[in-house]
Length: 111
Length: 114
Image (cartoon, rainbow over all chains, first blue to last red):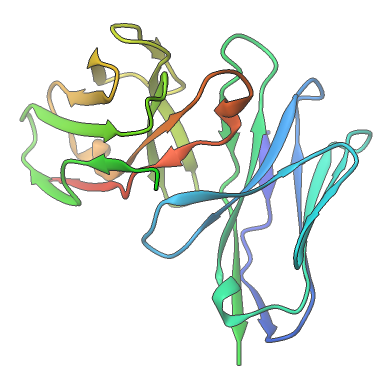
C-alpha cells in the first residue's frame, strides 16, 4: 500500500464549479500535511498547509481527518488558472521527518 | 524572491557516462533535497543534506551520490548513467524544523540516458 494515495483524475470541471479532492495516508503517526500545486512542466509549489482545525485561503479550503486518515482540498469558484496537478504531501514522524508526496490529482477547468 | 536554480533544463547522456546535476539556492537554507519524478510514481527522495558536508540517503539512493561542499550548492552525481535513470530530477531547499514542510523547488532537469 502506498504511503499517500490520491485519485489521479483528471477532474474535468467548468469555470465557477466547486471541486474537492481527497487523499489518504497510511501512517497514523504522521505529523504534518500539505497541498502542493504543480503546473504542467513546472516545479511543485506549496499551496497550503493543512492544520487539524482546517484552514482556508481564499477559494481554497483544506481539511484533515485524523480518525479516517485523509485530507481534503476544496476549491470554490474554479478558475481556468486552477488547472494543474495537486499533490498531497505528508510529513513523517521519525528521523528527519521527510516529506512523502502523493502522485497527484489532475484538475482541468474548462470555459 | 526566493530562488533555486538547476544547472540544466534538459540533458542527454549515454549509458555509462558520469553525470553531474547541480543545484544552487539563495535562501541560506540548511536543508537541500534531490528528488526524481516519474509518471505514476510521483516524487521520490534520492538524497538530502541538512548541513554542509552532511548527507543522508533517501528512499532510492542506489546509483546516485551527492556532494555538498558549500551551503548554497548541492550536487547529484550519477556515477555510471543507466537508461532507468531517465527521469525528471528536482532539487529543493527548506529551512530546518517546521520549515521542512515548505520546500522550494528548482525548475527541474529532464535527463535522458540513451
